[in-house]
Length: 270
Image (cartoon, rainbow, N blue to C red; front, side, top):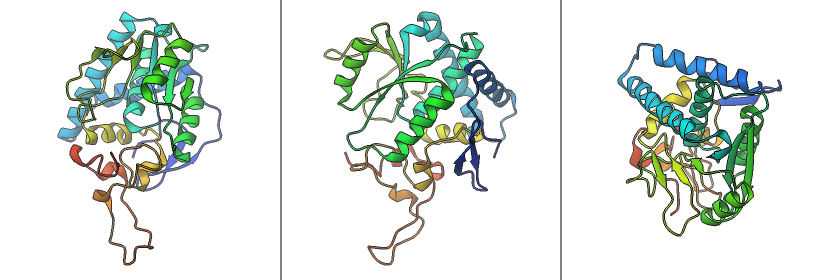
């Protein structure tokens, strides 16, 4: 495993441990560090076919983000962020692109919106709080349905015209999306930007682990798709053994050991 990108240590299996008490890096230095790590990854000879695919996906996604930065000012852009693996990859790539476009300044903060589950995990909220500090997020929180949350967010931050979203092709309602899609009728009007739309589940985790990006600790407990406490469970495909009794706690392997896209949401109640 590489050195962690930010302030988390990893154990011998790559799992997250404790937060580093050091102060977060200023945004320009953070973006420069991320860009250096991404640039080194892209310049390296890929040891596996999956790494080669992730390199290609990374180049495509950076191109989409850089196009968005050409189309819109930073004040017009925001990021939908809930601490999950997909929007985490998106955030890292966005910070990399800010460095490449020379837009990272000490006074800048990343406009973002967090639509909170009706029954949020404490671990998710804690990781989002960590992300605010580490990544200089100016994050607005809304505990309401998505359509209403976006309506209120755009009313509160009227300069926003486009929002980056970490949706992938295999997500619900993701099959027909492109990199740039205006919202559908009946929704608040803004441009949805989907830089990681064509990434596969295993590619997301390959990027996170290869670059040493800290992530929500629930993923180390077998959760593969994070919703709320009432509709999200460890993925049964990652069960490490069979419980002898129903009351016995069953261990689950970490999320990054799952490979198949279609198994990602086996731990979700829909």
